[in-house]
Length: 324
Image 1 (cartoon, rainbow, N blue to C red):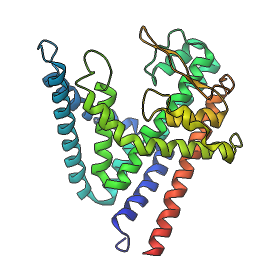
Image 2 (spheres, rainbow, N blue to C red):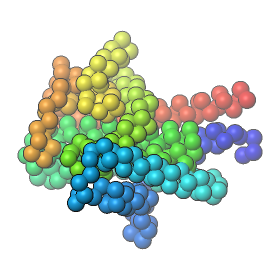
Image 3 (cartoon, helix red, strand yellow):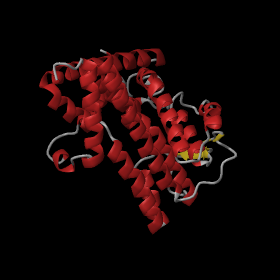
Image 4 (cartoon, one colour):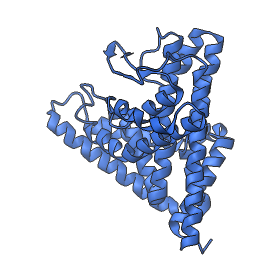
């Protein structure tokens, strides 16, 4: 291995980790006895929330925002140090940690569970989709459940697979741990509500920054997967871009819009979060209404996109090694 550079070794680790994750997935038995790293991250984030975002104190929004920036800085430094220390464990440590933090199989299993539940009954499907989305699911009908599952699958291909992979490739274990800490913080305190609008500002913006490139790469790979499946033509590859920009998030809309065109269905539109109605434009508004079997088609697209990602890394690695 001495003939390989650091980035080449990281590429090899990443390929191995993604393949192991797809074959093995989350070691549930292990997490019954040990805390998952993301659970530990969550406890640190909750600690910062309790200490720096106390309800009883009449802090101004400006002060809460400053506290939130201090919190995300503290969390990122802790994650970076942890990654640096862990990197002394060698390639085995890298493979184990990256495999744990890449969520490809978990994503597939959760989306597939919705498809299975839909074939059983609507109540089971509503419960299954409630496990993976934040929107109100109690009154969703079949097409709304399928749409929610497909949108979540596309978005989380970026958040759960490609983004941590790219940050590991760029910065090693510190990179992937910083990303996962930030992404977890955004999911816990990045809400635009009275409690977190100011305090979660730093976490939300830093998460947006870290996901900027991965989200667009994910969209491209989903679109290319759609081309291989025959549902997209090269001449129409760019069509998802304007729709991606209509999303309230600067990143989430990209993989979702690409999936809408890859499956020739419309996604997004209005939905409820609690009692609040969110009105959003449809992506691919001329697409057909989603059907339950589109969930499986979306899983095929997600798998194909991951294969394309692995091939791109492997071919780049070969070219890089031969050229050096």
